[in-house]
Image (tube, rainbow, N blue to C red; front, side, top):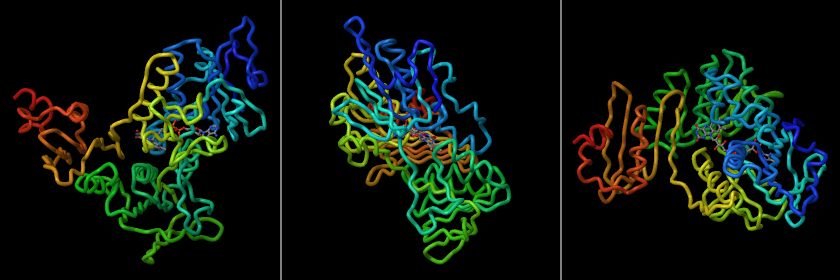
Length: 425
Ligand SMILES: Cc1cc2nc3c(=O)[nH]c(=O)nc-3n(C[C@H](O)[C@H](O)[C@H](O)COP(=O)(O)OP(=O)(O)OC[C@H]3O[C@@H](n4cnc5c(N)ncnc54)[C@H](O)[C@@H]3O)c2cc1C
């Protein structure tokens, strides 16, 4: 267990008990479980918005201090260094009076006693509790999924194993969503011979329409990745470790390494142990509070109005709302409009709203030479959705048109050419 504390903070032994009031008052202890991007963002907001109001303790399973998970793809591809992913230097926590307990898993929750049980058996009391336990990567339960050499792509430990894969060896990535595409391109850049297997007829179907997905496939193939679509994995085989992936149609792909990038599932085990209400994620209301008063959930582990989010922007919107609320100001989180802004293997991609646009009008602009593509979906003369591939410079303008439901009269003819043209007309 690593502690990042200031001299003003108690040691872990005393941190386990709530301190007794000395002058009739003591600071409330806010315990945050999970040391990911949501947890750190919340702490940053609280030390900014209401410094000193809470005694903040963070219990984080990973040994590493909170880091930028989004940059793991760049780390794998060798485009970022370990120091680039660090979000705050170790000394920062102490300077801000935050007790960060790294390498500490919270394994049990007793909300009636306002305490969390750590995997060491120690108990940690709280006045308010924020669950920010994120997600875990799904391993498809096919035969062989636990063989050595079969990995997921979720944290720095996964990346350090992937980084040790030998150039020239063969890898199969299962799953053609964002993470699978990133993992495949990262491994190809490291010199591995990579096959990307996806069950759907196109890559990243949740973020891209058919044409953008086709362009992405071509971009990924140019990086040396073999892409196999509509492919159902039947088994992973090998004597003692992975050697090949077998598809249901009988095709076989040699694989000294298999990366499962088949989706994520909210990490709800701790909440469940405390009887907190769960559906897919930990259910929260517009205050980000669970069914147990004083227990909140944010980030990928939370389910708000039936939605669990899996990208950073909504996670940060939740975090800002909770920080406002915890610092004593009115705040409501009413959900996030899903926008995806990504660099997929070096290509900027943006999508938002109803980008499939079934039954709506679509304005399409494509520059084959530049490899750029735009699709704008129009309903009732308002922008309803957008997909941008390669040239995403006007993404925020399109986003605001969607959010504000701006009538397009006057700018529609030049909409596809971007803000500068449309507004100059
Ligand atoms: C490789 C990769 C690339 C990505 N790229 C993008 C991108 O380009 N754009 C984008 O928007 N999003 C991207 N994402 C998603 C983004 O990283 C997540 O949405 C974000 O990290 C979610 O933050 P979180 O704090 O909710 O969860 P996490 O970052 O997963 O943090 C949760 C933390 O809680 C810890 N924890 C869990 N249970 C316990 C427990 N019981 N006790 C103590 N600690 C516990 C976990 O170990 C983990 O460290 C990417 C994700 C990955 C894996």
